[in-house]
Image 1: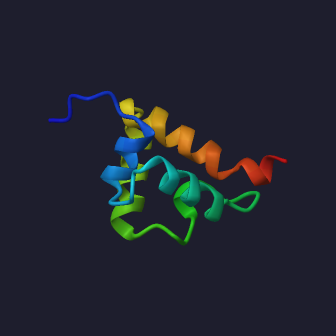
Image 2: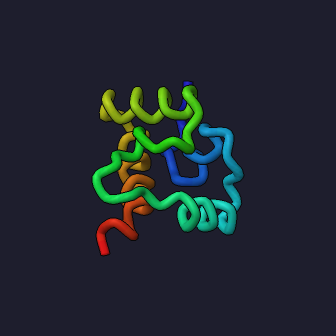
Length: 80
């Protein structure tokens, strides 16, 4: 069981991505979503990463807040 409160760093760990702050910033900068594309639809996720994101977002559990945060960060260019 996972007892820690999820954070962006822990989400990147769970997704198998580098979770150092500079790496997170770089990922966000280089993976901006086009307008109208939902985060889980992006082509840069593996199937297991996509499954994790969708599963926890649908459960509306503690991970969903961090997933929403990442979605917003990946959509900053589309919101401008």
